[in-house]
Length: 228
Image 1 (tube, rainbow, N blue to C red):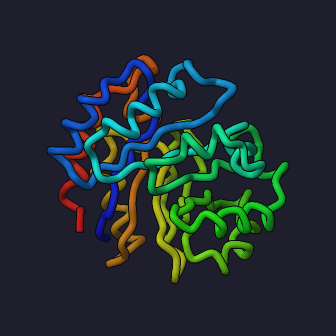
Image 2: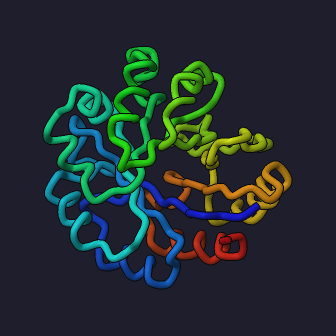
Image 3: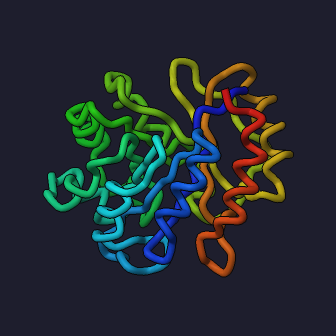
């Protein structure tokens, strides 16, 4: 298994953008992932629009992702100008179908068509028992990736990890943290073989629900062994 990215999710207004840039200088493979959920902006994990704009212009790292949640996801589908503007400066966009049960309220054909329209981004779709039916709609969308994530931000790790699906760039998330990452990377390696993948974590890099830069550094030090 080779890692392309280690994605760290959940920085917010309380997080120093300079400190994030320092991590990216030391670990160029890190991908900072920002949650966009307009109805929760300003709460923990959900930065405000000014902070997102500052991040897009000031963050020095090469890899940036945005996770569209709730009204952020629906706003993307509706061509909401505010959502589209905040997406600028990011390379990968995760479509959070699990959050607030959005997957049951969205036409997968419309979602795939919208992703194909915005070819400059790579769109990440969550893949699991609830959303397997979405994948066929993305067969004609070259700019997509799959994330195995049954936890959906709850911090619950699985007992085993699935093998990547042939022909898809796949990632793993769910319950990862500095204390268990070594073990789970071994399990992922057993599942993925020589495939290029990425990992993502959110709850496991927080302390008292605050984005913890010390935990982030520990994670990146562990993950570095697997970077391509």
